[in-house]
Every structure is written in structure tokens, then in C-alpha cells.
Length: 345
Image (cartoon, rainbow, N blue to C red; front, side):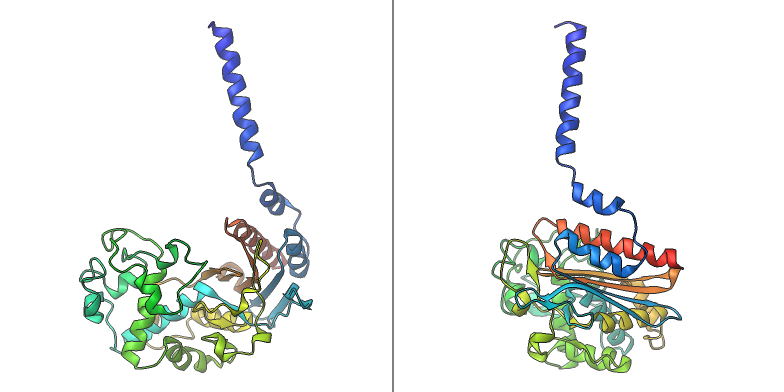
């Protein structure tokens, strides 16, 4: 084979590689990203439906302005009920902000210690969770424990456990993912154990009971709930999974349920410090973050405070998929909304 033939073959391989990579480019994501920015948030919210989302809710709290509410699509697709900006929604892992604050409050009240270990608090787990005598409460709050994530177990979302005890059993006697405090790895098991710990030290039937007493009531948040049994199901936005006809709203998965406004008020108070009592903000800042996202089948949410425009922006979307494609789209939509708000400023 001569030099010209080698050069030609190389060019063909490069061309084919480029063609193949172009074929797999997520063009809908790029299109959503580069599309000209509309003038208003409502226009952007309406545009979200072009990406096959069933429904979307957005709440905006800009300093010195009345809160703004936006919605598009369906609250309930089957019954053709339009999306309601005041609807309840499963906020999934946004709940971790509430739990981290609850831990902070209990630490400052001397009822918990960030440096005590899992073995101290749950001696019955010493032989069932590796490094239990090395894993501190601080590490669990910060996702640095190395405890495996129970939601990563095979087929978890197809047939989820019916109790926290059953969920914990999924990872008991499993090897640690890493030596405690050597790295960060998100694990819902950390917060399952934290919820159990809050119940243990408060004597309450659920960690949400303490969250309600210590966090929600002082803020007059009356549209935040701990379970489906506490709400009128008609007020809960339906949740949908791509390719599945079933409405997922009746699936009990341990998520806090709240309106976008309630989450927004909480997030504003968390970020401006008005929610903290003496000494709490320093402790909280040392262990956890101030913004969060949430994702469970049928429900994805983003809750963030944007310091540059002094605005809290909450976004709820009631459509998810297995590949994470809808999540990427939701982030693009959210970032475009923030850009619109920044431009208005």
C-alpha cells in the first residue's frame, strides 16, 4: 500500500467517524439550546411543550417584585385538566435541603453530633454496613460515606420497596463503594439513614413531623406535606414516564410534596439566612448546599437561588424518561428562563 492509498483510507475513516458522530448528536437538545430567546418567561414555558413535556410549572421570586407564577400543558393528561401553578408536586431530592437543615437544628440543639458515627447511632448496623464505625453523620450529610445507593440496585424503580426498612435491606451486607471520606458519591441511602436518625432522636413517627415543626410552621408553609395520605390527590400534578401510559401520581416513594411557591419561600429563607437561628448558618454552610434538584419517575424539579439577579426560580416538569434526555431538556429550559430574567434586569 503506497502513501497516497494510506492518506485516502485515513480521510475515509475520518469522514466516516465524523458522519457517525453527527448521526448521534442530540439535535433536539442543540436546537432547544440555540433557539432565539423569547421575550417573556411565559413564552419559554409554553415552548417547553414543543419538547413533548406533558406539563410545566415555574415560580419566580425576584427581590422587590411580587412572586410570578407560570404554567403550561396538563395537570392531568387523561382528564384534560390544564396545568395549575399552585398544584402540589413531588419534589424528590429537593427534600434533602429540608433534612440537612433538620440535622443542623438538632446539632445546634446538642441532640446530634456531626462527628458521631453510624455505629454510635445504629449499633445494630455495625456488621451490616462496612466502615460503620468510621462513617460520621457529617459524611452522610455530605455524601462522603461510601454507603451504596439503594436506588441504584437492579430494577429498583420497577418494583420499589414499600418501606424504608425494605429499601435499606437492598444494600445491607454489601461492600462499601469507597473508604469513608475519600471521595464524594451521591447516595440516597445516606438520607434514608438520616431520616431514621431524626425519628430516633425526636421520638416522632416520621422525620417530616420534625421538619414541619422546626421549619415549615415558622415560615407558615401550609402547602408542604410528607406523604400522599396527607393530601387531596386531585391537587397533585400527574406524573408521566415516556412510553408508559400510567399516571405515576399514586406511587408512594417517600418524597416531600409541595407547591412551587412553598419551595420558593423555603429556598429564599434558606439562602438569605432568615430561616436560621443563632449559630445554625455556620453549621449548615459547613455541611450542605443551598440549591438542589429532584428526579423520580414522573417528576423532575429544579430549585435554585440566583444571587446575581436576587431571584429564586423553581421549575417543575411532570415528564421523565430512562435515558435522561428529558432531564437535559429541562435544564436547558430552566437556564433559558434564568437568561430571560437576567435580560429583564
